[in-house]
Length: 116
Image (cartoon, rainbow, N blue to C red; front, side, top):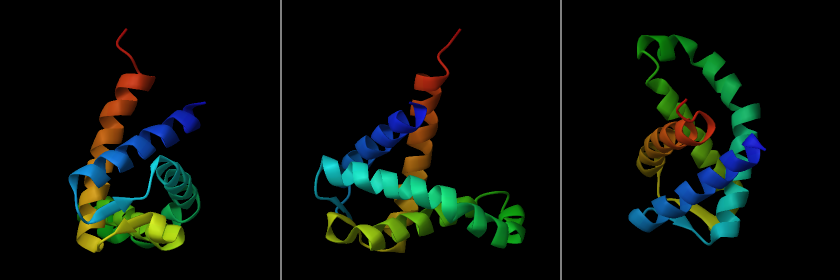
C-alpha cells in the first residue's frame, strides 16, 4: 500500500513540475503514473549500482552527488517513456530531482509518520 501511495505522490509531483517548468513535459496523469512506476523500478534496479560505483565521489561531496544520481535516473525514465515524459536536459533533470526529493521528504513525513 505504501508503494502505491508513493507512486501516486510522485505522479502528482510530476504533474506539478510540468505545470511550473517549460522544460518538463508530461502528456497526462496516466503518463505521470507510468513514469513514476518506471522511476521506482529504476530506483530499485539501477540506483544502488550507481551509488556503489560513485561511492567515493558521494562521500567526498557529503552525499550531494546523490542528486546527480537521481537526475540520471530521471533522464533514464525520460528515455524509456519517450514523448509522454520529456525533460529538456540534465539541468532540468537535476532541478527536478532536487524538488522531487524535497517534496517526497515533506509529503511522506506528513503521510506516513503523522505526529503522535
